[in-house]
Amino acid sequence: MINRVKDLLNEISSLPPKLRSKSGNAIDFMHQCLKTILPLVERSPDLRFLSRDAQRAVTLHNVPFLGGINATLVAREANAYKNTIFMTGSSVLFGNDFMMKCAQDNERFLPNGNLYRLMFFVLMFSSNCSIIIFKDKEDIRTTASSIELIHMQDIYVTTVWKYLIYLYGFNGAVMHFSAIVKNILDFFARTEEVLKNLSYNILVDKVVTQLECSLSVAD
Image (cartoon, rainbow, N blue to C red):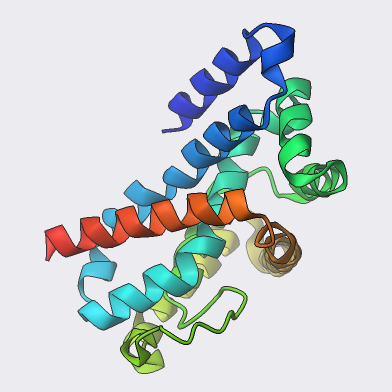
């Protein structure tokens, strides 16, 4: 998936100058980045152990935020934030100030992307890790039980902590864990801004729908 994103970025860069900065290119690139969350979630055996209602709650409440985090990691690995053409096209869609903030946040991310992907699963098994938006038509059964999720979270939190201690020792683990939490909180602020963008919401809805269909077929 990351190679596909890199290829798409190269394709955009090879277009004639007038076509490179179109917002449609940024939308295509963002969609590809968001879609990289699908294999991560679909192949999680722990997600299969949850009830159908809990799976739906996780999908609806957590994927919009987690998809954005994963998209940010993929964009970083594709060096998108250092690509002038990508930044220009994305600024047309999201605004220059927003993209500059994203690039600054990206610089503060720790170089080890595996740490964020492990934390990704800690957040995935949260009852709600997204910004709360009231939906009067949402079925109350999509509110997952914390008891059903907390065991999964415990496993991944322990895994993250042991991995940090293995890499950096106790004191280093404390500092790196604090840095990861700070990065995630920063990303919450970016999510609040980007959720005001209609194009982004449409992309997220597509990914959520695709994931729900995939889980239903698996059941």
